[in-house]
Length: 237
Image 1 (cartoon, helix red, strand yellow):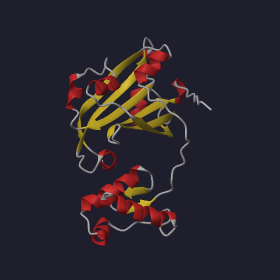
Image 2 (cartoon, rainbow, N blue to C red):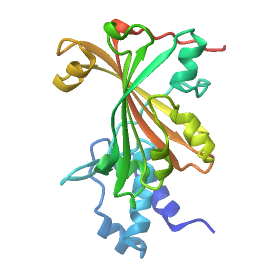
Image 3 (cartoon, one colour):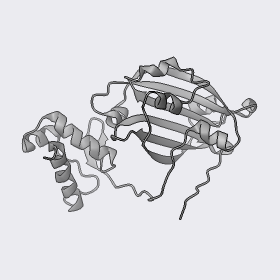
Image 4 (tube, rainbow, N blue to C red):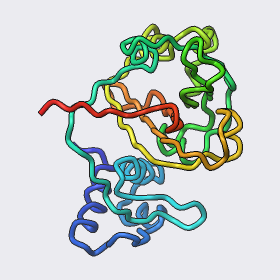
């Protein structure tokens, strides 16, 4: 028997596909869907969270949940590779400076990704440099958010250790990853940390990594200044 949240998902997606609920349409409130389907609020939230994660819905704080335009993704094979391994493959040794490593309250956006029970996360923020090129500035500013329960991470020195290795050693194996790339102009804080002029162009890559059960392992935001990086896409046709 299918879970009740699947029934709600199917109902919402049918409304979207038929055009009854177009892009920008505010869907019924949680309490209305609870009454309609005779389920608990947590069941409705699970359905809505799954559709938010898939890009069909978007939550706007203090306003509601809206139908959003579907994202078009290229159907290509992507291999998961840690930053350290990628740099090693390219013959570049990396030095790391840890800026923040602490617990923090989960934002609404992070709670949507990790699940409605998420109230706190672990924040790990690092600057990465090419070895012996400290004077040229960092290659990337990386901020990772991980579940509060992964307290074993505090046993590692991430100036030397790889986050991927730490997760693998505790059976937190990465199974799938979704990456979203966005161009941006560096704000005051980011430009100061990276030793660049405010407004300099950069690439923001947001990665959401899941295990084989579909649970989110980590959410990572990496900012690459375009003056110090180039991106090459290699696809097997």
